Length: 345
Image (cartoon, rainbow, N blue to C red; front, side, top):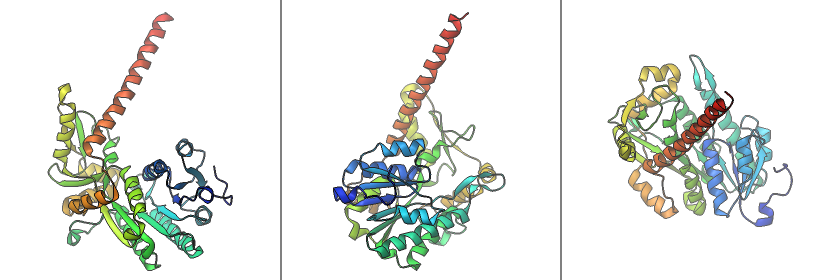
């Protein structure tokens, strides 16, 4: 773990130093791992708890150093950003679930955003920071049908506005991902993804743009390969554009050899809004307007930046393989416990 104030590794290796906020979040982990693999960067993984299991796993990666930092603590960010060449910043609206509120708190994310951008500004004034990459969320396909937009979308768009307001847009690339594949792994009873069920929050015939969360790391790596070209730009990014029915059909083909029938199940909108109101608003928004990633334009950019997007088919195969390993492990443990019970009889 790096003590703040000591000589950073990039001073020794001459590799650019990239700070990654919320490094143990889903996005953060993907970005840290992708940059670590390149051997072109020294990565400063910023997290609130440098002794967490996730943090210690990141520390084992090549070219990665851990630094304690919290988006709700501007002074910790000031120290963590000391001497960095690039900052990858992301924020979260999630603040613990409460009845009648859910877990999404717009004001919580806005405070993080202001703290983050203010400290980016300070780092830039110091003279070392050259590039800021901010993770927002995709704008609407049809701007005329944008309202009402979910609060956890507008918070990120308002942070984008703040970046422009304090004159940081010239050094900033905004990546705007769409819904994650990983969101299909919800824990709602009867609507959890399995070989038999593909759950979704929109009607089966609505086009829905999605992306693997790890692909954000690929985009960051790609943007860093051509920083001057992509500064002062915002890009809606996606990996797939499929209907719920098409998604379930992909899963169906993967498990067809097992004589399993997969069906698409839409989670009732009333239930979504009771559990997490803002996600219900998001579902309405997707059906009314939809994410605005230009899939054809993205293919050209991906080719230029050597980005191979993860397909839903690939992601599902990896997920099923992982699930099978867990299931086999449980079965082995159960059989072992049964044998022990027999032995002690």
